[in-house]
Every structure is written in C-alpha cells, then in structure tokens.
Length: 293
Ligand SMILES: Nc1ncnc2c1ncn2[C@@H]1O[C@H](COP(=O)(O)OP(=O)(O)OP(=O)(O)O)[C@@H](O)[C@H]1O
Image (cartoon, rainbow, N blue to C red):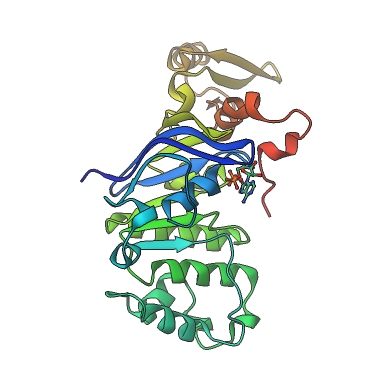
C-alpha cells in the first residue's frame, strides 16, 4: 500500500454550511503531510472524519486501508492522536498516565522511552497539575505515540511551546517519520510545516487549493526573487525571475564581493497568504492566520 490515507469526494455539511466540499486528498505511507488553512477551513472536520470521530455526508475515505467509520478495534491500535488539548488528569503523574494508556495497546512503546523522547523524564513523577502549558502539551504528544502508531494525527502540536521545545519536538517528529510513522500535521505555524512536511495541502472553505512540497507550493520555485545590495550609500533592489544572472552581473560589476547582497524568494507564508486571500472574509482578516501564542 502506498497511500496511508485516501480521500475521494468527501463532503460534510453542518446545517446549510458545507464545511468540507468535495475534497480529494492522498497521504502517502511514511510521509509527513501538513494540512494548512485558515480558521474554519474544514481541517478539524476532515481530520476527525479520518480518525473515525465524525460522520460524513458523502465520499470515500480509507485510512490504513480501512473505512474509519466502520473500523475495528485493531485499526484504532495503529492510530495515534494528539488532540488540540487534553485534561482531567491533574492528580496523576505523567508516568502513571502513560502506563495506564500503554495498557490499552497491543505493542506499546516502553514508558521510559516515551518520557525520554518527549523530554518529560525530569517531570515523570510530578503531578500533572504542576506541569507548565508546554509540558502538558508534551504529555499530549507522549499519549499520542505510546501505542507505537503507524499513523499519527497531530493537531496544532506545538502551541505553547518555547522555541527550544519546538526544535526538540521537530526532532522527535523527524525521528518518528524516519522510523516509518506516517504523520498528518495540522498547524498554523508555516515554519513548522516548512521544517517538517514532505508535502503540504492548503484548504479553504472545505476545498483543496494547492498541494505540493513546501519548496514548490504555489509555484514558489519559479516565482520572482528579490536581489538586494548596497551601492552608493543606499540599498538597491531588483525583482527578477533570473536571480543567478543578476548576481553574476553584479559580481562582475563589483569585481568580487557585492556589498550587503541578499537574494530572497517568497516565503511559504507569503505564498500561503496569497493562496488563501480570496477565501478569507474581508470583514475578519485576522481569521487568515493565527497569531502565535
Ligand atoms: N459541530 C459543528 N456544528 C456546526 N458547525 C461546525 C461544527 N464543527 C465545525 N463547524 C463549522 O465548520 C467549519 C469548519 O470548521 P473546522 O473546525 O473543521 O475548521 P478548521 O479548519 O479546523 O478551523 P481552525 O483552524 O479554527 O481549527 C467552520 O465554519 C465551523 O464553524
């Protein structure tokens, strides 16, 4: 099987509002796939349908070869889920929480290994009520991976993480992916998608707008670059589709180093924002992207 997830013609309507509108999407086995989209785009609805938690109105969905709506217990064993937040475990320690969760899987990871992977070893025997927001989030992630899933759903996993914790988490995701885990990541952090994802899909109003590698999304590779340098006491810039030619000409003109030379292409965030712009409610521009916590 080359696809871990296969979606064809998926539709979900709440009342008169079509949250997912004829969506086709494949996630390949072993890849890290990031689903991007503004608030209300239909990401959570789609992911919850894939997880078997929400019904659909139409369409075919296969997750690890099974329709999640009719999936047996053994299928759930192969799925790991990190929801936006979990709670209610305040009086237990992370070690107790993980030991108890591990019991419900057939081939769980060793709890000490999970504590180590998620950077929780030092807090393993403290009550979770005393954990910081970022440490609680790590426990959510630990719960998602303790069952050694073949497919891991991560919903905004690094919200509340400090920069070092995010880097550590990215390392963890890469090592899980390296070991063959397929990962479906929803995030509002474009740098996170750029660092982690093999491919990204952008959805808005329940429809797929673009699907590609982060480097190539929305024609980024062929997009105009901005070449900028210092000359005559001021900053000069030129936009061009042939930056190498431009830089060669500058290097020849300056006979060597070009002062303050930079070459920039549109960032993933620039590309994403221009893709979703037509779909964002003009009255609510903030909905286009979440402000990092
Ligand atoms: N249970 C529900 N009942 C009614 N409408 C819903 C329900 N769940 C979601 N919606 C609506 O469906 C649309 C898609 O919501 P969804 O939560 O899937 O978006 P999202 O892309 O995950 O957004 P966010 O980035 O804000 O988490 C939104 O307009 C939302 O208001």
